[in-house]
Image (tube, rainbow, N blue to C red; front, side):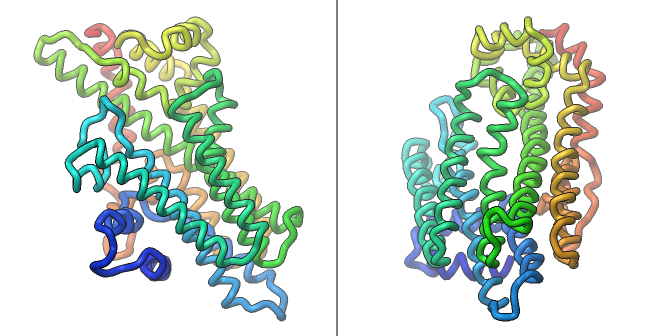
Length: 379
C-alpha cells in the first residue's frame, strides 16, 4: 500500500499546487471503505511469475513494471467509481462524492466528477506508455472499452434479463480489467499470450473478478431492498400510505442477479417487469422478493460465485508454488464470503483483522424471512 501511494503521489503530484479535487480523489483511492484488493492481486501474481523469469531477466525491473500495472488497474477502477457518482436529476446531494460536497451543487459536482475521472484515465494512459509494450497498451485499452460497455449494460440494459447476460455484464465491468492486468503481468515476464502461464494468469484474474462482483452485487441489491424496507416500515408505523417513485422501486433491478434468476423461471413476472420497464408498485416488488426466497435464488447465485472462486484457485495451481500463490488462493476465498468482511477496511485495527460483532448479512436474512409477509400485507 505504501509503495502504491508513493507512485500515486509521484504521478498525480502532491503539495499545495494540486487541485483540491485531485487531492480528494487520491484520498478516496486509499481510504474507501473497501481495501485495495485489485492491485494486491496483480502484485501477488507478479511475485508468483517472478519465479518463472530467466537468469538474464532483471527481477527488480519486472516487479517495478508489475507495480505500474497494479496502479493502472486501480486508477482505471477508481475512475469508474468517480464516474458512477455522477448524480441523476432525482438523486440527493448526499449520494454524491467530494466534488458535490466542495461545490454544494449537483451540476458543478457532476462536471468536476467527469473531469476527475477522465483525468485519472489520462494518467493511466501515460503510465501504460512507460511500460513500452504495445501489446500491453492494446490489452488494457480493450479492458477500458469493456468497462464502459459493462457500465452501460448495468445502468441502461438493452438486452433481456437473463443470467447469461448478467454474467457477461459482470465480466465486462469488473472481470476484464483484472483479467487484463494479470495477463499483462505474464506478458511483461516474457510469456506469450497463448502460453500456459499467460492463460492461467488471465483465467485466475477473470474468475476472481467475477466471483467478487457476483457476491458484491448481492450485497448492493440487499442494501437497496433494505432502504425500501425501512421506508415501508416507517409508513406502516405512522399509518401512512406507502408511496415510492419509479426510481426507488427499480433500484434493486440494476444489480439483482437473484431477481434475474427468478425472472428466468417465472414467465409471468418476467413479462410484467419487461413490459412495465420495472416494478409498477410495492406489491410487485415484494412479490419478487418472496419469489427470491422461495426459489433459493440467493443460494443459487452464491453457488455460482463459489464456482468462479474454485476456478480461480484451480488456475493458480498451474503456476509455481510459493507463498504469494498461497496468498492469492486465500484471497479468492475472501472474495466470495457472503459479507466480504475481510475486504472491509473498518474490520482491521493496526493492520490485523478483527471479527465484526454483528454479521449484517445474517441480520438482514432474518429480517426478510420473518417480516416479509407483514410487509406484503401492508403494501
